[in-house]
Length: 501
Image 1 (cartoon, rainbow, N blue to C red):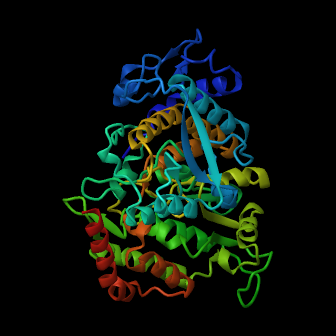
Image 2 (image 1 turned 30 degrees about the horizontal axis):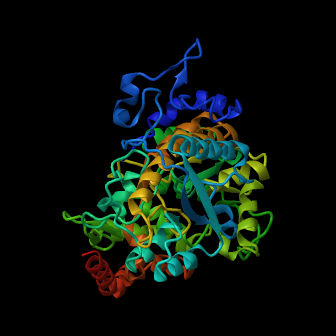
Image 3 (image 1 turned 90 degrees about the vertical axis):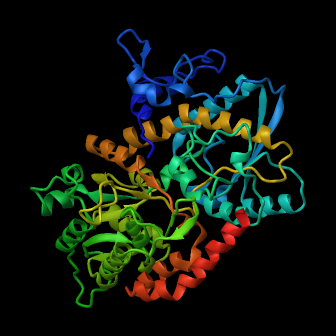
């Protein structure tokens, strides 16, 4: 799994370079990596940057391996998600973010300016509220409007199934090993030796959508004065059983029939989609890969996968210690979130967009933990990134010059790693959203272990829907669900592999 090695070196210089308001010309060779020494110079030791040495220039900037070529003002057109996507609209190429603020906007502008200056290229960003239809229409009519596209990963899986995307690995100017692509994503969504879409530093949304556990520190101190939750993580004792145990202790339902009340204290505010995130955090997947890098069903193929899925669903089915967002008054995500930020819940599984909103909504003292381990055999904490709202990058088959598309994707991705990732990870999260030093350590654990599941992305056999429906119905007979959907799942996989072949 990719380490966030260089990110930890960036913060001091990132803050100064984003606030300095330098012009692109005056900052053309500015170093965006490293920490300043006492003289203000930047020093990144060879041991600290050795992992990515071949992708760093003399000033410590991430740069593509390709030769820099003057594009003579050529336009690079990319379509991204529009405002209708709300929290999950693209904030990666435009500079009017209100959720993440000026620091991200300045980083995006810095990246855009750097690429335009270095390559003499003009960026044309189309922010569309009908992005999926726009791309499909363009491909069906062979219009060639877009050089690159950035809908969600799930949308890209559909486009790949319709043979609307280039195999990125077939293009000379695409470097699948580059550190600005998420290796776990590329591994998950490649089939055989083909890769039609991926994600990485070109977007913040794979980090925004990485699940974690928010916890109320005041309630934690009140009910567990001797427990350091961060130390539980370090000692590998932060697990699903501990989460359930703590949630049950805190829960105090004031109504005789268990119905919702403003006086209730809940162990956790959750949703019907969370059991799948807990399952993915266990290291198990709906679908894994065989020796030929072809998808194979993993859910139900091992005793551990079935038992863990049932254990999670059992707890969610019988829980009187949690409040489901879907069972709150409309608008459900606002009212359920209020239960947490008003201090009436110990835990809340959340993507990182929630930490940004939480900072603006409340003064509650909160911390961030990774998703818990599921059993003693698990070595790493995993963050199961679902694909319905996470943007990916791809090249449509109707692109007029796919090698130009790949060339520019490399450039924008590399400079995003120098700028946008720094702004989001180091500044927006570390210095605004989180309110203790330990949560920074937790971020490293979470973002260093983002996992993706091709079975979730393509919903083979409707297994994703099965998880959701079982949770909604307060049921846990996952073995029957697996059995009922297994043949369809295998057929879905075979159809996809045949298409790739």
